[in-house]
Length: 125
Image (cartoon, rainbow, N blue to C red; front, side, top):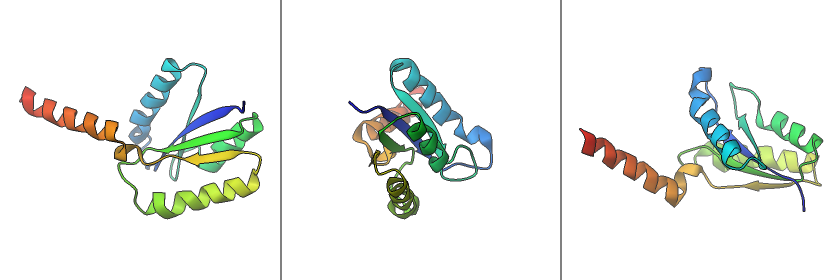
C-alpha cells in the first residue's frame, strides 16, 4: 500500500492571518486522524507553494497525493491553473499518483453546514 498524503490547497493572500481557518482545519484533521499526513499549500503569496509541498512529500516517500482545493467554487484557478500545476508535477514525479478533489465549497455536506450556520445566525438574532 502506498503512502498517502492530503494537501489542503488554498489561494493565499498577502495577509498571513487570512490562512488561519485553513491552519485550524489542518490541525483538526491531524488530531482526528493522527496517522494521516495532512499539509497546507498555497497558490500564491504564502508558503509553502504547492510544488514545494509536493517535493517534500515525494522526497519522504509519499506515492499518492490527494489535493483538496479550499475554494468555495471552481473558478479559473481550479479550472486552468491547478490542473496545469498538477500536470507538471505528474511529469516530474511519474511514480506518484496525484488526485484532484473537487472544490470543498461544492461538496453537499459543506453546503449543508453553511446553510445551517446561516440559519443559526438568523435564529440567534
